[in-house]
Length: 311
Image (cartoon, rainbow, N blue to C red; front, side, top):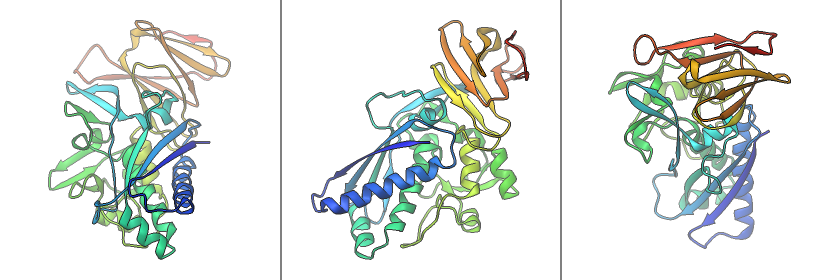
């Protein structure tokens, strides 16, 4: 199970210790809400800063650190450190927080006064969605890369659509996206599913994580019970992909890897660097293909019984 660690900073010095404890409990519950849908056992450190002056925004999330996981169309593809940690167990930024959320003091004050702590839960669910996957390149502290989310965007600038296979299957079509106030699930899709990842929440609105939200998380490389594709950079780690027919995608040619069993797990070694990835509940491997277009890939299905296979 996911192990959240919540650090609260009251920049106003106006909240009582009991209020801060309550907010910490709500944030932990929100993180565990995501954890219920993920095959992740890592800790997730969340720096929750309560600040004045954010109103009318109720909260913001700043994705400060990213992990390079792939190359597409000559550009680097990155995942957030939080997403990569939950997918592989590798802690890219060490003692630094995995997630930074700024929460408006005015929103906290109103919610506590109206005894609507469940609304704060929905807000933090929403912000954690941004920290994990719902963020385009323009919202990262990096401008020479795409995000995993960006890989599934299509359509015009006025009508962008998320084409991830799990999300499109559940929604019945590619999912509408809006950039009006950052990257969000579009109004129609958010209302149809009651998703907390829409562009706005009505004060007091309570929206738990939905099947659409989990599907988008899966498409963006988080381990769920769906058919996940997890992009793995050049770092060691352990991937437990959970249920479904899951693919681990590596950012090098298949000739660069050695694959063998260790007990019931598969171990993939990147021979040029020596890093290892232990794979649990992974059924397929995907590598870059040296022959063909620049972004060509080759997929290998893991056998049910073998000690070592040649790539």
